[in-house]
Amino acid sequence: MHSAVLAIFLSFFAAQVVVETALLVLDLRRAAAARGVPPALAGAVDEATAERSRAYTLANGRLSLVGGLAGAGFTLALLFSGVLPWLDGALARGGLAGAHRFVAFLALLALASSALWLPFGLWRTFVVEARFGFNRTTPRTWALDRAKGLLVEAALGLPLLYAAYGFMRFSGPLWWVWLFAFLAAFQVLLLWLYPAVIAPIFNRFSPLPDGPLRDRLLALARDAGFRNRGLFVMDASRRSGHSNAYFTGIFRPRIVLFDTLVERMGVDEAASVLAHEIGHYRMRHVQRRLALGLGATLAALLALSRLVPWPPLHHAFGFPAPTLHGAIALLSLGGGAFTFWLAPLAARLSRRHEFEADRYAVRLARAPAALRTALLRLAGENLSNLHPHPWYAAWHYGHPLLVERLAAIDREAAGGAVRAAS
Image (cartoon, rainbow, N blue to C red; front, top):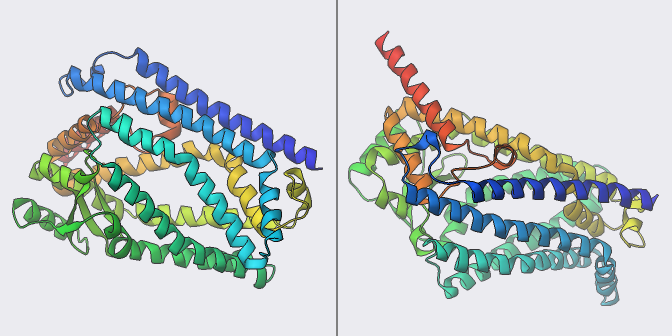
């Protein structure tokens, strides 16, 4: 039976690697062959920006290609080298049992995975981002960020693992339901905790100064009936030259603007960006995505509850007997091979939400031209890919293509003008 398990896993894993690699190669080939500005953006994007965008796409794509293949090799090495059962045995021989062995095994696996991606993070930050003028992070800041992240993960993750063991071991056959309820509550707690406690560990947040921009944004939030915990500027420029804005929190979110965005955008442009983000909340996109994420967690826990006591799975990968931590490790390492085909469905839903938020922004801010210029400015300053392969975009892009968004904004503006005239 365990040979059938191996055959099924390898078939799905190979399909995942082939599909994702092929899509990325298609996107890279399209970018390499592209020249100039796409006709739909003629006059809106200059030739120099288009060429830098193409080069940036190629640099990031090639790094992603190497990283993807390295990740696949790392997964196969962990699953088939015998290192996982060896580690489990070593922990047992070292006197660890029960919850301590469970936590140590999974924590060491997480550390190994983090160590794999460190060189890629270094290269992306200090080679790719630096080459295109985005990186402002010093080696000291980068190292401190990694150390802080590790400490935060340990402070949150280790107690979480002990709690998960407790539910799995002591709450009966429906442990996966009880664990889901706990994880759902923990996730909501994190959404509340992140802006006030975790985010300030890495960045400084200061209230948006008084002035035309603050007045415009506060009026916009009032018009939308959008209750929030204030407007804040984040010192993003300490690490990167990219621009963005986001909300954080779930019930009364904070509005956070990158300092780079405040510096570069006009009042109406920034207001349109904020109106777009308000649209996500007012149309309950955030709540829907949270519900979908929780649904995926519940499905994963149900699958885990069936896999934990199934000997063929454990035997297939060298474990002499089923263990709780072994099942979690196998599901986390190999589960993506069975769910990767859901990526285009999630991306399509996300693109739909982005269109809806754009329409809301046009109606709320009543400045479609400013929203257009804001999107063009963000695309130019962040060197977004102007020539993506349609298959790659359909599979991976959570935002519509720039030309599609601009056309939809124009249609909504025209429709609003017709409604106003009638």
